[in-house]
Image (cartoon, rainbow, N blue to C red):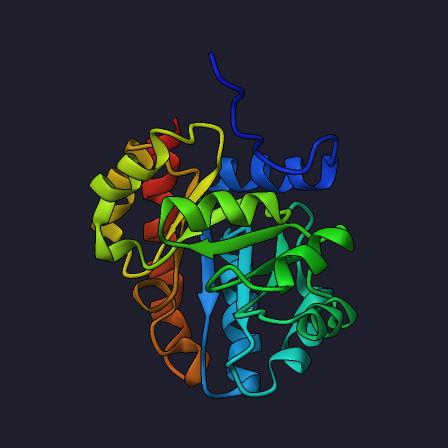
Length: 224
């Protein structure tokens, strides 16, 4: 039998904890908004409703300020992260702002930099080659993005030769899709629009609370 694919940097407890915690919680919320204060409010609301992982995309205006403002409100056992982290410089900036994990949209220089700094990374990849490369560069998990291109069947096909790579399904994951992705081996789902809606741009936080409860309920049902 050939050697199995490592699930993360050998001996790195922080990477392992990130994967274990994400596998237990199942849902990562992705905040990509147009207003700094609204992004902060949406993140705090998500944490209040029990979402354990919240990512603020750097494409959100004032994203670094938002992460700084959110960090004091992160409950025990939860984490605030930064998304769309592309460069080594981005990693330096988000770490200084208080980000506890990093998410990328592709195989980028930020993966190795974040790993070197001990920041867990969910690295964006679509193909088997990209997934393998991301893990070799120090990713903790692979964000299969955009998952909607091939759906759960594609995730299963990519995962079959890499059973030890933790895959997070991201991109167009609706509430009705969660069970299917988890059913083929995804450790969790990353959800932007279908969960966050317009809350990070000043939209209804009460509606956000309802959506968050729905996603958590599905994730808990699948995990039980």
